[in-house]
Image: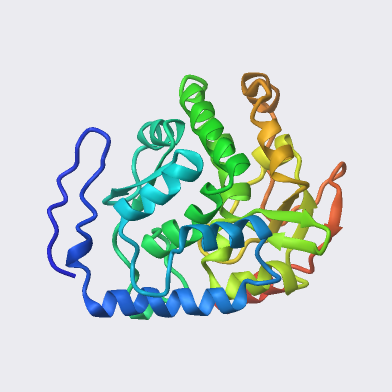
Length: 284
């Protein structure tokens, strides 16, 4: 990709510079897009698939954020803004609270098609943006941003980050047809789209806000536990709780490891953790 001016403003936004993407980068988006849209029917929740269709994210190259924002704004009032990398928490929360979704503008290299730690434009736009076309989930994301801004005075960002991780990034949802994926980290990953629903390895637990906020997560591989929400309405209602009371209640409680199942959990699937154990043995 051509060199792009990346100096940031106070809000860390930068120009997307859509015209500088190369044909190879557009082709990489197309390949990733085609692979996921063939896999996701029957796996991703209906709301995600509806958003994908409504926004016409396309198989014809990396979306232009201005055009994408124009379509999204008409549906739920959200826009997509370009940022150079992961932004500070306060900046991120402020953007969400004002219905602006920060997205990385770079696209992964050909050698990173199946995994990368820093989110790229495919993860951010394909993974996150379709659900922002859903009014209820769009409200949840705004409420999360507002809650994040309030949380800065409580020194509890780790608890709030876990909520984001286990819902927005790696959430599952109950549907009449069975469990479906909605988390962006899953829907944008070919391998985890299968693992999250099909593997016997991970736990699948019914979502409980305090339980989620106590649970550590891993950023380097598939999740060892997935939390399952009943509906987006129920998830949104959780954000109306007084988080300050929850932060105080959890202040002296130990964090839980990603693989743990503890008394009080509502267990849909108690995983074997075979995958995680095998990967750990390979490191020895």
